Image (cartoon, rainbow, N blue to C red; front, side, top):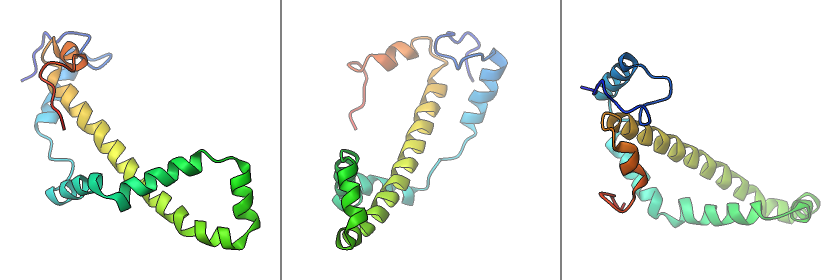
Length: 135
């Protein structure tokens, strides 16, 4: 059960003790956000050069380009044909990164909500040298 004496600096902004208790109970009753199969897929994604590393590098390259690069695509059908599949790959990469971002944000929130019953939680959160987990 959530501690009614939760330190205000670790509680979500504007939360009453009753609100915190309801949020805490909802968290305790929650299901996993993803299945074991999706979990394994996300872990594999981190090690996949084809699904993460190469698109990341290409995204960074394209993002660093100015108008001349895009003018070249616009003017030259051969270049446009080469870039067309890359556009699809970058869109798929974007979708995967949105999923990763959403899950990461929700996972962090769940940890913060569970930890808010400890007045020291924010101190622990900021101190990465003690009790931290290396992933």
